[in-house]
Image 1: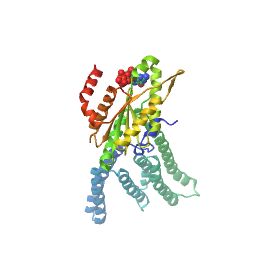
Image 2: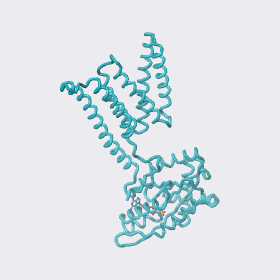
Image 3: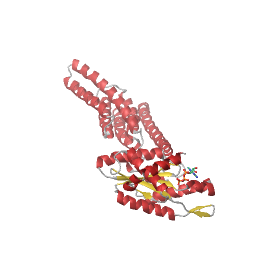
Image 4: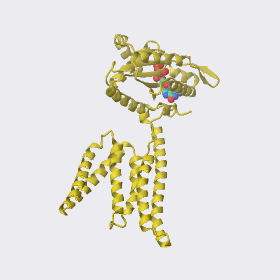
Length: 371
Ligand SMILES: Nc1nc2c(ncn2[C@@H]2O[C@H](COP(=O)(O)OP(=O)(O)OP(=O)(O)O)[C@@H](O)[C@H]2O)c(=O)[nH]1
């Protein structure tokens, strides 16, 4: 079965893209923009001095666009468009200086830089799609212009740069494939709870923060549910730590199976789990969470020929009803979960009035737990 965490990732976070991660792409693009802007600025003033006014204006315009890009690239939501918008004219320019008459005879070496840049900035698939046509154009031009197919010495001269280009493309493709896989693997382990396969606390927190940002933009409400296993210590104490581990794993797959693909579940630590229920009001969430609670209570857990059951307590809070901030919402759900424990466990607490009445009970319980 696919690991639980993979099935709970939202689309925006699914991995599969290769190349550098966005923050690194932005840094690299800013450096590339600034170097190109300085170069174009210099060339523009030289062309102006030489009297080539149209070329000077074109280069000055390019320089200006890049300066704007330097400021926008850090936060622009259209990073990919900026990259493509930069690479296509740059590669076209490199093809141009290769094919214009009396240009440098070694200008074709720029073709080797194309796959490096486009793979790093766009990833494997888009990188190949963008670099290959430009490299092919340069190779075709060389074959037509300098290939004397009757002269073996000329053919060797032609094949050397062609084969070198192919080798570079092939190795960058292989390297990027392996690098992207290794990075995905690392990120997966850094964000995943090893026992249950669920997203761990840091991944949950990142998703929770992002959900709130999205909810602020869209105005669509969501519910945060915190869940804690009841008397888990006694399971460990009576049946052993392995039985406790089996219980955690069984519980994790139950949560993943029951929730919608748009919802998100993570293990926050120990026997505590967090659930983000998107596009849901408090009434529907309470119904769903209570069904979940009953399902968990009825679910048999098998260990070493033994069958046992466990129960859980939920505290739930709704955005924006209970709080408009991540911290406030979390505190609200956490407070209610503690109240549920205090009221005898195996329950779902979402009631504000009851909560207000019992603030001091909760504080007392926390103090006891701290002791
Ligand atoms: N088997 C197992 N036990 C764990 C793991 N992480 C935490 N625990 C145990 O979970 C237990 C938590 O106990 P408590 O915090 O006292 O909570 P509880 O017994 O569930 O009591 P209430 O929450 O008040 O209902 C401890 O015994 C921890 O050792 C784990 O990964 N595996």
